[in-house]
Length: 300
Image (cartoon, rainbow, N blue to C red; front, side, top):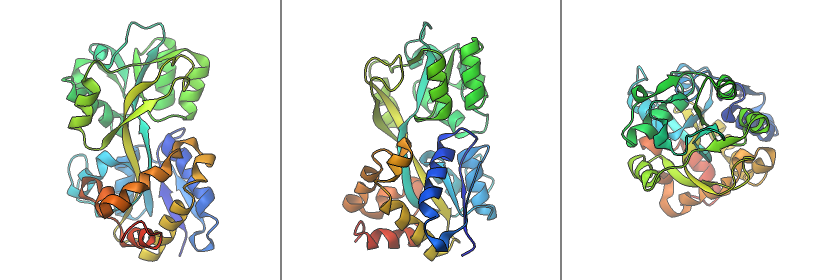
């Protein structure tokens, strides 16, 4: 093997921090060294395209993108022969505003200035999907296409009314919470159920009281399942070894990065549902990943 290359997302992103934790685990396997963890400006979309071009061997993606990449749907210019490796986390996607803001619920965002992320990013796609299920489009508000750090700065300075944030803990959200009191927007009655019924790659999760300074009660939010994917051409032995190392580190990875909390539970559906439990968007398990899961008695 000539080492393993992993694509993540922008600086200060959750994907990057998780990728660096994976590096710690994977580099213990001599056959996998060196482990190269790189940033990708447009995260899921760019990682799929980099896998297609052979620039990386594995990539972090939100599960809502992998079926689109497989089918060559917009924004992908061609079909990409992706294969599933492992779930990485199911973390909340949540809208925030300053604690002194009049904004209370997601529906209150209509007509407001919302930081959605870089224009071609996965975060912008999530904003479009979530608002769309509630009868809004990005045209119904002022969309600010800023990265996490720039968006947080805009919120503090009063140049934005709200921001769509990614799973915590992340460096930008931690710094923002220390700097300003932040409100997490709730979903009005039945709206969260509407989102979850409409979008198969979201799951219900709860942001616990105290997760942010101003969060004084538990609040239910949608969570996207984020995954590690590869390309069909990547060698079975490489994928098997990477997958086995990840599963073996299920208890350690949360200690390295809290974004991996409850990671072990993400593997449980394999036992009950088989490989289809991981085949988001119709993307099949890589044979190397399947071999690793069979060896771990997760697949029959």
